[in-house]
Amino acid sequence: MMCNLLAWGTVAALLAVPLTAPAAMWDLDPAHTSVQFSVRHLMVSNVRGEFAKTSGSVQADESDPAHAKIEATIDAASVSTRIEKRDTHLRSPDFLDVAKYPTITFVSTKIEAAGSGHFKVTGDLTLHGVTRPVVLDVQGPTPEIKDPWGKTRAGAQATTTINRKDFGLIWNQTLDAGGVAVGDEVAITIDVEATKRVATGTNPTSPDVAIAATSTRSGSPGTVVGRR
Image (cartoon, rainbow, N blue to C red; front, side, top):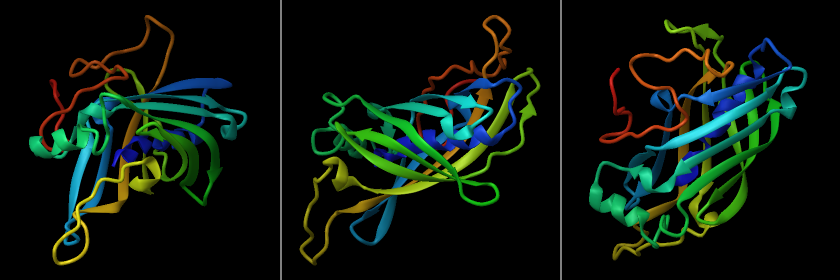
């Protein structure tokens, strides 16, 4: 379910935005970025959740976007499905085993154009101690904008599907009527908003929330902790 860490691949779309220098750094704005996942439950419905603590950056190469580098990290223990008992189970050795594997990471290996406003971002996803290639379908990026505090921003959305068993997440329970309690396929949707990094000491900061590369969310998916 952690695939959701793929969120980072979404930032890759920002590489298509014209930059003012040969190389530029973009930082994920965690207060306005969502990494969500969905998996079948009892073969009749979907359980949705998110990861509440994320960080990431993109080193963009203006002359050749294919040479851009994306790195992202998710705090595995920040998984939230709004049900504490279920979240505790997800953090246990049956699933994420966060005591042994505290982080989920994504590192890009290839970025390709896939039609107007679309990209394919391939990268190595490390989850539960297993590293496998994952391809993100990215829509975007949006045009660059200046926010009221002087920051340059852009956004994009990425989707992908992974099989949790590929990452050693094999726990399940057989139902008396047939079938299993938890589906194998995990659908991931990542909405990214990123800010272009500027020289130290000149980076404007919004008064509503510090735009660092770390954030904490709580409550239902999409709820942001902090002043807005």
